[in-house]
Length: 201
Image (cartoon, rainbow, N blue to C red; front, side, top):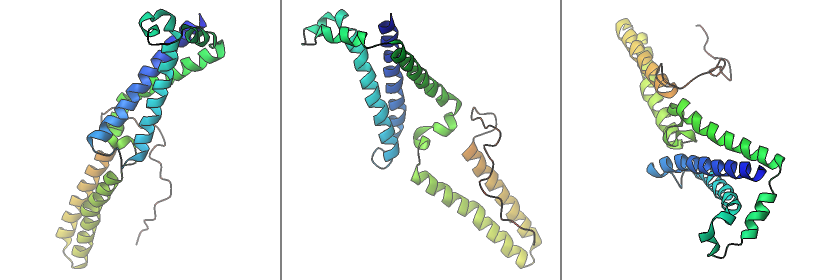
């Protein structure tokens, strides 16, 4: 009985981990980041090797039923030994591993805006693009507003500030997701790591 549960759990783990490896490596390949994004590639490799490992357990346990595979030289006794290796503790861990894999896949729908493409990992090009966008739309806008204020051009300064605030809201919306999307924030998620340094003058 235990080997049946263990075999089913390992099959689920193999399928789930193979799917996870796919959803990680495919966007990296599409964006040509397989070599540059080493963290993402290594993570996909971990899930892929684990999928092969657990899939191997499943195949071995089913060897006595896979007569066509026996012609390839695979020993039926290997499958019998694999079945005997499953005890209640091993089965519990296999079931938990399968549950974690399925839970991870379910989170991709909930956090789709944050996990789309290669954004799941540290993408330096994306961070550089965001930094340039903040500099172009916010920093330069504030500089223009400050200069206009120093020259006594109140209306132009207010217009620059209004445009800068709009650009800032657009950037924040792009980073956090549109209102009503499935990207969920919990209490305290947006708490600052350090207090603001802005002071009244």
